[in-house]
Image (cartoon, rainbow, N blue to C red; front, side, top):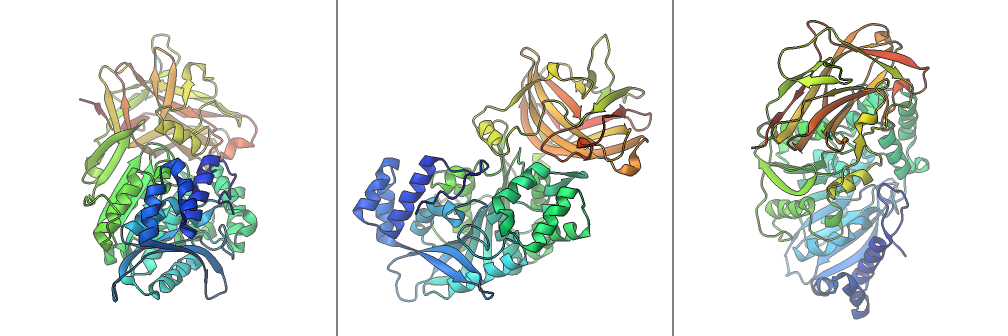
Length: 564
């Protein structure tokens, strides 16, 4: 049976990926020369010959107490000595149609490193029965029963259990560790920490990402509770029920428990993550007091760990092997000890590798660039150091369509291009200045870093209520007129704020970016991005006035410093 169970463009497997996973699965189930020989076309035959001698793979159905059956696989080392017990790593599935088989490429390395490996698909996902609860209490209870089933087997050390998960599996792993102290180490790649801020940022729904996730889950497979939440989010009804649903599924809710247990937690995310909140992951990591690590990379959700899930080298999975080896006593890694720090890449260079002890040490101090009116016959406003500037006004039309600038032309896929050094570019000179306000620095005299947290203050008077603005910070090349996004953030005003000037201060997504000498920073204030669910998408055309009143002048606080 083919493992290619998904056609969704977010995480679709290529024909080559599917064929390789099929061949790996067949060789694991039937380690005959013919099956293993098929792997030679990918250079994997030698690895699986070794695996056949030291490991045994099987597929299993795990029945939960309520009758739900979880689709799973188990790999265990062969020929254990009497009384010998090995550490175990449990792999809850990412959100993909093939479920736990997404980890097939990792099975051999974990087992050759002396681990028992149990991979499973959460209830309602892939081949498992039941309804999808989105890492809810039922999924956490399932994780405990999965551990019970695993440690009941001879040769598994109940005191050395770790959880590794990507995406949906990362959230499942973290939430399970908050409830089951038998989990002695956790690695979550493309993780989330606060589900609510991932769905709802500065009063703005992340509707494109939300709908993509619902599509991947399959709405007909979701629990009644989740379907009700889906309808509320679509309708813009963000009430206590939605908040409580998200809180129960947010690792940050259990921060004190992780700290009490000193649970070792390694987290990974990406600068242009479009599914889960990056600031929430950073804040969660900063709040942990036990052993911890954070990796932030170029790209979008799931991009960076893909090679590692396939069995190749990748920073997230290489770090995961070291992490588990250190805390559980296996030998799947390269023998190096893990580092308990903040590791990062800068955009758009995935070969870069930076290390800092903490996020506070990593993030550079911010300087203030004031938003000022145009001078000398220029069309665009200015971003400049110096004194605060008041008294200017820019009027924008909210038409429900906005400019061509968007957070990501394609969820996930745009991030893959960024990892190839090919960020999406825009000709900002072609932006309709009636739909967006643009503020630009002078060309930078020196190559500079933008590294850390950013904050924007604006005063906005929306003609109608429930108005949305989207702020983008770009690097512009004045020689070509092309620019690419560094960071962004939306903000939505309430109905009560219609017709009156409201000063708001809100964070943009954190960034690590190198701005070349002679380039410009451009701040674009737009009124629409299809990534979000702007409240003004279906309203009549109306205006928003951006102003900078005395005493509440507009500014951008940015960690901008010379690169040398």
